[in-house]
Amino acid sequence: MKRVLCLVAICLPAWSQARFEVASVKARPPDALITMIGGAPSGNRLTMEAMSVADLVSWAYNVKPTQVVGGPPWAGQQTDRSTLDSGVKRFDISAKAEDGSSPSLDDFRRMMQTLLAERFGAAVHREMRATAVYVLVVDQKGVKFSGSAPEAKGILRMSGGGRIIGSGATMTQLAGWFSNANGVDRPVVDETGLSGRYDFTLEWANPQNAADTRPSIFTAMQEQLGLRLEAKRIQLEYVVIDRAELPGGN
Image 1 (cartoon, rainbow, N blue to C red):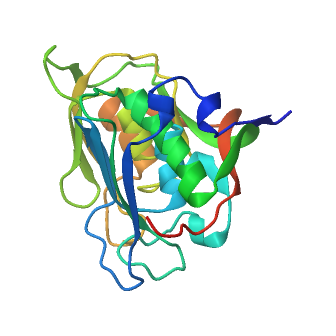
Image 2 (tube, one colour):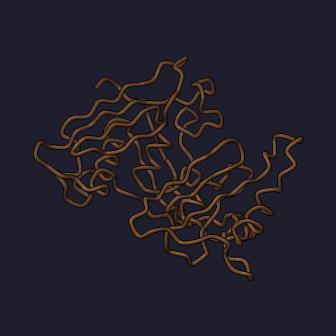
């Protein structure tokens, strides 16, 4: 059974009625070059750049982009994110909670849910769907990387094509890096049971480059990290966009 989410402010947990005090929503011009997608809160402000409605829903409801479906074509995901050439509309968001407030990340997410409802006429619901995924598990021989210092920050960065370096990174970060990306054609779900932070380096072949002689991501994951990607079908939660409209003025 579908569980419909109420996006009206009074139906959400109290935080200034889960609403930004001031919010600006500006559409990106169709020929604008994208240098950054995303953003983060700072103090009582939230700034986001080049976000599609699907991106905003993903952030507001704290699910991966691949777990957001539905809505009109202009609101969805875009394969090539270097330019706005696929009909997907993107927006810059600048918003502020009331003066003197200290919203948590969850508070900001709830306020974004209200902004989506008020500015984009968005209505969504959550539902479970049987989904083909890869689960990330520990190989029988054990992992081949070490734990990080307690104070290490979770950083996972690309160093050239087909090479990443983890410094204080989590297995959740690693799974997210390969969900429908970087040579993996399905979502990846972390089932390693490893809850710490770790240091590691991983190199694999670019599947688009026939001359790349490095191992596939599946082989590299096992040989270099002692992890495996196993095909599985599980029930995965999705956020479905039932309705969305282009916003009017600020």
